[in-house]
Image: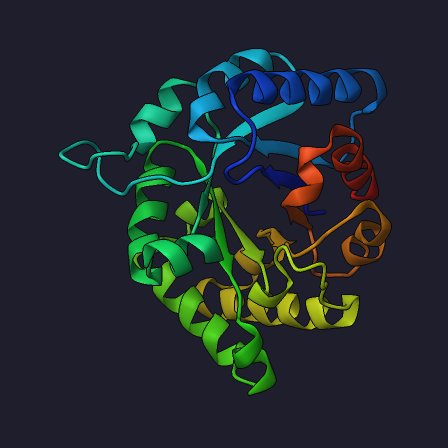
Length: 254
């Protein structure tokens, strides 16, 4: 059985004090109410809060992820941070290829493959994001778009390295809009992604890789989404900024 994973992407929210308070609140709820189960919990605060967040969750069931990573080990890349730097502060996951990175910072799938390669070399699990825009969905090009993102983003990633890769399907038209893909729509794309992974890596890997759904996931719709055969949890945006909402989504994955 694939272990469900719920990751919270805080995006550019919360100053250091607010981040520490929210991490502490989530940590307390998880400690008091979370029972050991199949669910894995990851919180991705801003870079500002990564080091202190990792300290705050030591010895708990909460792991810390970064929202971005650079493909190089080191160098003249002002404003960036490497996989080695992240692993040195006990960061265990990194979001790669989020639609906002693609849209606002011109991040390409080919660049993502280098980032994934760098992350897995340090034992950091990549949360690789794929998904279509509303225009691509309405023109029925979404499968083609996602196939290209998978082929380019996973180029050069070996079968062994895939054990440190999680794929997140995030339809761009559902991110922060309040719109959510129906459970049937989400399941259809997740099944397609799993089939593409099988084509590239074989059934053993496609059966074990986790595929998350992201796009306006809330406590009210998480249970139905997570009950689908090929949906293995969620990459949560706005709802992860409220400790109780985030925990209710985690419970939906159990």
